[in-house]
Image (cartoon, rainbow, N blue to C red; front, side):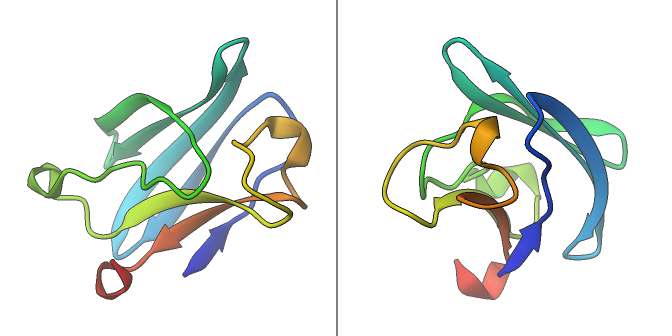
Length: 99
C-alpha cells in the first residue's frame, strides 16, 4: 500500500504516478460527504465517487485502472472528512497484487 498525501483543506487535487499510471486525484468535501475524482492521462476514469471508510473506490476491473484507492480511518470506522487529512484519514493506493 502507498499513502497519497492530503492536506486538511476541503478541496484539493494532486498528480501522482500510481502503478505506472499518470493520475490526477481530486478530493472535495460537500454537505453530503467526501467525494473523489480520478483522471488517468487527463481522461476521466471515476468521477464524484462517495468516499467511505475501507471501501474500494474504483472497483470496476473493466475500467483498466491498475490497482485501487481506499480511505482508511486510523482511529475507528468513520467515513473520511477533510478535517482528518494528514492524520486520522489516509488515502491509500492498493497495488493490483494487494486486491
